[in-house]
Amino acid sequence: MSTAAPDGRRPLFPMMALASVIILLVAGVLMAAFNERLYAQQKAREAAVQAAILADTVAAALIFDDSAAAQESVNALKSNPEVAAVGVFDQRGRLVARLVRGNEALPPQPRLQAPTFQHGRLTLTMPVNDKGGSRLGAVHLRLLVEPTWRRLGRYAGVALLIGMAAVVLAVLGVSQGALARANAALRAQAADLAESNRRLQEQIEETARAEEALRQAQRLEAMGRLTGGVAHDFNNLLMVASSGLDLLDRTEDAERREKLKAGIRQAMERGAALTSQLLAFSRRAALKPRVVDLTARIETMRVLLERSLREDITVRVDLPRDLWPVEIDDNEFELALLNIAVNARDAMPNGGAIIIRGENVAAEGADGASADHIRLSVSDTGTGMSPEVAARVFEPFFTTKPVGKGTGLGLSQVYGFARSSGGEVHIDSCEGHGVTVVITLPRSSKPLSEAAVAAEGSAAGRARGRVLMVEDDDEVAAMVDQMLVSLGYRVAREPDAERALRRLEGDPRFDLVFSDMVMPGDMDGRSLVREVQRRYPGLPVLLTTGYSEAAALATTEGLRLLTKPYRIDALAEAIRAARADGRKARSRRRERA
View 1 (spheres, rainbow, N blue to C red):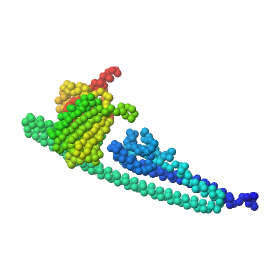
View 2: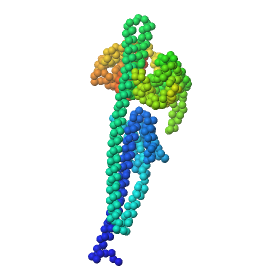
View 3: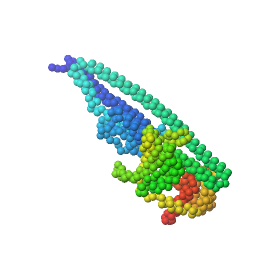
View 4: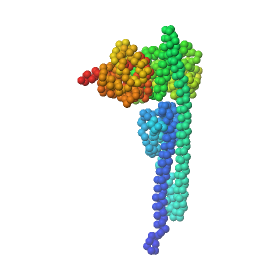
């Protein structure tokens, strides 16, 4: 039987049906591809929003290096069954917090990655930045997504509809209507998703504004506590110094004058310690690590500790003689130990005991390398602290003391010292049973530095030579001049770097240039060092400053630096070290010649 029309043309209706089937087939494929694209975009947007929220949440934790807070933020994602793996990395690429389900694994190093679909998973890595745009770290997020074959299986009904349309042309109109309704529903869903995304973005922005306002309020409150505490402490120190100087002029009793001078000196030491705490918190203090014996160092601190405590408080030291050496800034260590002792003293209003213990802990790192460390614990018999207080004691400005009784920087300095020394610190305490502060410090394989220091100290009385002092402040210059003269040096002074260089051109026979870093004129102390080294190789230069930014720059460039305020013995030691550097430089130059 022929299927052709009487005029020789093919029947119109079957052709229309075939064309309709082809059109429906193409439309079905395009619809599947379009839905897949919408699905991928939506999932990518959802993942990006979750990663952005996590990045904003852990930013503060990365700023203060608080892995516990970062882990709490990550644990909040456990309720989402689609989350397969989460990792928070700091700016050095270390894994700070993690959440892994099943056989999932985190990358060893974070690499920024846009949302990527692979093997039924959506993966992305997003940077964590502070408000100034500085990089703090990264967050890695991996979500489970529905397999492609399962999603495509949902379109089996459309394929069946197309097959039925090829057999039963009568359902062609019905199928087309169903397809139109399906497309309308998809467009409605896409509109709903777009509206949901818009509302979600508004909520994120509103939350970010609220968090920023809260952080600003906390900063203002913290700065208020800080300035009040620091002003109170410095006023007390100034009162001790000014009244002591007045009383010195009114008494001729030698014993009483010595007591007054000791009080003034102690006030100055407390002021220097307070300044060190502020610099440690701002991370601008110039660290000077060297290898020390903790047992010997703590024994030499007994007098300082006992002087800082009351008579009803005893100090017991239980340290083995074979305690391993550590590489630390011993001045910062002394300040940290003193801060712990002062906090313990305030927690024992009726007296008690402070026990200092130490032990060697042999350990092995994850990579098989040695992780030996020293465990130093300082315990007291005081009132202890609640878990809520213990969780915040290392926060800058946090204090439970009344206004004027503390700045909240004492234990923050301890935390900063431990971390900058490559170690850790934590608190063990419960209310009514005292507090134990545990500091772990890595073992050093280098030789002790104490012998060299002792050798330098033995030569204190043999200082001789000429010093060119570059200092613009007349009062400071007068006091430093007397200190140098008392050490046996002859001193010439210039107020700025340009005049100092002209002085050296006319008379280069100086043994040392002792210069302030921050001076008037076009040249500062660092520029003077470079010019002296260029013109007069081997002539040592010792810099001094009380400005934290300048100190950080000098330390970075490896320059000899003496931080203000300093005492005469520190000045003598710094000059000896600088002159020793000069002798070594001259010796190397002669060997090359």
